Length: 263
Ligand code: ADP
Ligand code: MG
Image 1 (cartoon, helix red, strand yellow):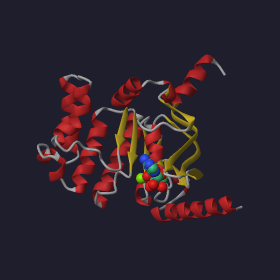
Image 2 (cartoon, rainbow, N blue to C red):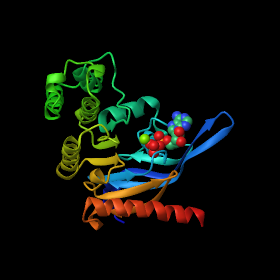
Image 3 (spheres, helix red, strand yellow):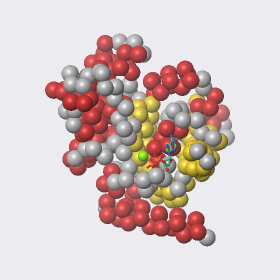
C-alpha cells in the first residue's frame, strides 16, 4: 500500500477495539463482562450496539471512552492508542473530541442546566463563539426555558436532553451514547435519531449508540449484537426494510449466539 493509502486507511478507522476483555471481582467470584470484543468504526459511520440487559454494553462504552481500563486488548480513538495516554492526556482527548451521553446522565446536581452543558467548554477556555454555539444546541433541544434549573427540577426527558446537549456542545468528532433515548417520548427519540444521522452524514461525525430499541437502531448504518460480553452478530440496517424486520433479525442473532455458545 502507498504511504498515502496507508494514512488514509488509518484516518478512516476512527475507533478500533481489538480483543477487549474486562472482568469485575466480587468478594470471592469474578464476573467476566467483556470476552474479547473486536470491531472498528469508520469516520462518519453511525453504528448501533444492541444487546440484552447485563450483556456488557455500558462497560464496553466506558472502556472505549477511556474511563475504565480493559484487562487486555486495545482501543484506539482517532489514531490515539488510549492505553498509551496518561490520565491527563485522556481527559483532554475526551474534552476535545468525544461526546459521551451516559446512561445515568452524570449531571452535576449543584449546577444549572446551562452550567452543566457549558462546563466542559469553560474548562477548555474556549472563545465566546463556541459558547454561543453551545447555547444554540440548548435551544435546538428545546431546553432554553429551563436553562436556569438544576437537574433535580428537570424531568427525566429534560435531564437526558441536557446530557445530550453537553455531549454535542464540545463539537465532538466521536459520539458515544448509552441508551440516549431511554427517557424520551417516541417523537423526541426519533428527532434525536434524525439529529445523530445528520451529524454523521453531513458532518462526518462518527457515532456509536447503545440501544435496546429497534426503532432507534434502524437509523444507523450497522448493528453489532452484544451477548454475554461478545459480539455474536453484525448486520447492515439496509438489509432490514422495517423496524419489525430489524427486531426479528436482532432476536434471531441472539438465538444463534445462544446456539453457538452451547455447541
Ligand atoms: P448492560 O449495559 O449491557 O446492561 P453492564 O455493562 O452495565 O451491562 O453490566 C454488565 C455486567 O457487569 C453486569 O452483570 C453488571 O452487574 C456488571 N458490572 C458492571 N459494572 C460493574 C462494576 N463497576 N463492578 C462490578 N460489576 C459490574
Ligand atoms: Mg447499560
